[in-house]
Length: 433
Length: 144
View 1 (cartoon, chains in turn brown, yellow):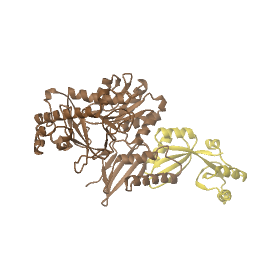
View 2 (spheres, chains in turn green, orange):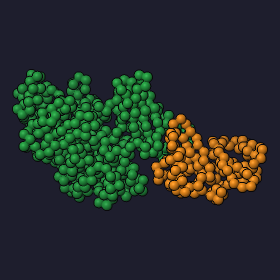
View 3 (cartoon, one colour):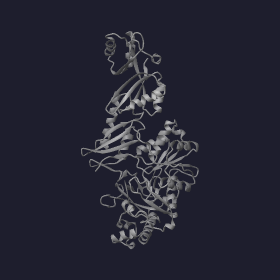
View 4 (spheres, one colour):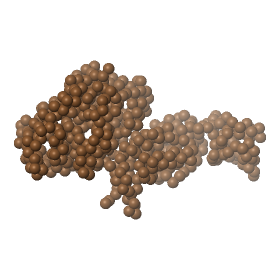
């Protein structure tokens, strides 16, 4: 039976959700108009005052804010509360080269942790569970967010943080951890290591995993579920908006419910900024309607996904977002074709290769080259060179039909691609443009 | 009475074969035969060792992808036409040779050892034996 952390809100009817959003949006817009000069200035430029915003139907009138705005306003420019009322900062991993510092009041921490608690309960978590959190702790939101959520649920929380794989496995086995929280690539690595150590899925006490912070494919989910003997749930979030738990997967494993009492989601055409209907892929945009210290309005996430309001079998009524198929930043443009690493991953896993791969893009004689490095596995190896080449050719063909362009496939030695303990480094772009 | 051969995936770069022999040396593996098949980017090292199980374990522990397969090892006398005789048997029986390589059999008669991977070992082996050729067993290999 489906369990909920806050059933009344998670399963509220559409009209109630709408009413909460309208009320909170109006209040939030007034709040930032009064407290954050940056927003007042932006609204004035657009010819708006808070009295122009009557409900969520007016949301599209408000200007977007981008990661560049956050960079320009670093560190205090978007602060919505006096520092005296702030109790925490978190910061992005800085993989895109622009560090963002987000501020939290105690209220902000509470709602963030509540969102994470909803995700843990949706994954079957109770106060009987042992939740091992192998996301990094510190400035990264992964560890602290799930840690707080696990406390709220009342689970025994094991704050291993990331890294030290053999110790992670020791804790899983010795403390009989039942829920694992980490990045999907690290879950895959843990699974691989445990398999090597001789553990079969039925010997591994884990029953569920809550994985996020990077794009991953359905094939990778199936693979992780098989090796660890678990059900794998998605979790999505970003530091700018709060952290993990902005949305989360449920038993239906078909999209992630966005916590709509705190965040309003829109999907827009990244070129024109126009709001797109349900089911259409575009850039995800969030408005925080219940946050105090770092209240972002229409923040462009650069994540590409679509929304659906269709009824979900789990009983939750909050809108679902599809697994992001990549970030607009991760998207590679190769010979004019849009390529997402997740597409390449899908092809590899469909052909029986491991999720460990690297994409090397270069420019030779003014033509982009795409080289996919894949590790040889015992399953794919045979004593016959012709057969290995044949399998390699199948990969090249499948990549061609998935991406619409020809990629080179290079088979490399096992374990020669560095394993990640946090976010995997999938792309090496050597093009100098 | 085939023998066990280990096939190892190697990337075609300087030092990779040495990495493999380094692992074998460190674990006292005695090689009986070795051959390389390569493409531009990678290859397969095929080897016969005194103790197949031990060699396979140490290679896998060192993160090599390796598999075991069966091959025929025959003794070829040191005289003109000996190899031709042997190959005629395969030809007559319509058995295809996927690959072959030779190794040294110590002894007064200076015979060579020849390893064959063939399409149909079950047909080929008894025929070779009927023609009076010596087929080596795993024990023979261990005792070389």
